[in-house]
Image (cartoon, rainbow, N blue to C red; front, side, top):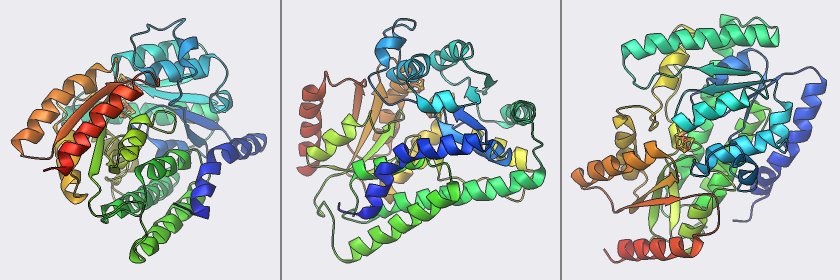
Length: 382
Ligand code: SF4
Ligand code: SF4
């Protein structure tokens, strides 16, 4: 799709480094995060800049494998390698890291990262009931206390409420953008949508990013009304669920679209999962934040039935023809959960389902092409 706005999003990541450097010179603090369980409202209320640090690149993995086991999830190895090698500018600029006890690999890797940078570890419960909420609420309060000490600020209720409103507005704009792909045919490719979702995360001005995203949504609506789309009404529409992806770890999205499909919905962390649910603006702010974040349907929760329901709901809403469940090698939680997700979808007589297990490398591209082409052909012939 030809669009000046898309080019602006493509440039956003590189530009944000300079903006971040300038902000640091003015005395702003930067807080790095690795997971969508990290409550960014508290960071924003502290006047700091939140920045994502999960790496999507293959390059840093060799450095990481000098310390970490080779058969570990590539996301963990890449994130550690990027930080430990000193190659990640965002990591270097971070004053504090927020991490949480999600999967085993990540939480043990964080112990090593804590030797490099100050790190606050949130002890995340692995269930989502009232007892877990009270525990998690305590963890959220501890994070606020740590940020106040570490960043030498006072976080007020008013600041938290304003941050909640801003982040809800960000969620609203990102949801509106993703909902555009419910149109048939979608006016935006999955790869462009992924690029926008991924790159805008590096914008240091959330209000500006909301305006940019809303402008793009309007532009896409206009394109649809003019009948402009890279696809047609017969293009197989795919929902992608599973592990987090970004630009650099996008090969499966690329293969699906080069093979004639269209990824219309990303249920995973950088996509719908992070934005479909708002923080309650009427409640006590830290409790409302705790409630919202604990509801996140990640495979580190046991059970994680909310994810199954979300996948099925989105499959209907986006009128998808097939579901692809992506798992990184070494990710036991998503890998095991794939069996249960498939069973759940079969019981619901949902769409054709394909699990793909891979890593960040290009070594299996040809094999993946064969499997994905066969899947799309099967969808098209039914
Ligand atoms: S998949 Fe789970 S652990 Fe990974 S970023 Fe998402 S919420 Fe965090
Ligand atoms: S993809 Fe799986 S193993 Fe990798 S960090 Fe996320 S939950 Fe952990």
